[in-house]
Image (cartoon, rainbow, N blue to C red):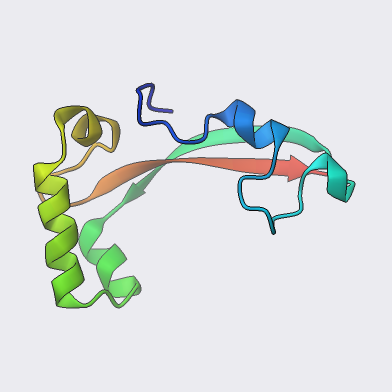
Length: 95
């Protein structure tokens, strides 16, 4: 996980409360988190925009934001010259 001021939801927050209210996986719904596995997910930009059928104007907007992003954001997301990037993800085992 990137450690910086931009972290929106640290792993501990996912354990305490559902980030998405409709998720319903927290203890109030009768589930208990047994394990969490954090991962880094590499997103190849051209495949991502093709898969999501991204309109050309949105592709340009995303690339502009990426290119103008502060260095700490570019470093954390590992933004590459072709627009590819890496995200923090987490998988849960619940019962």
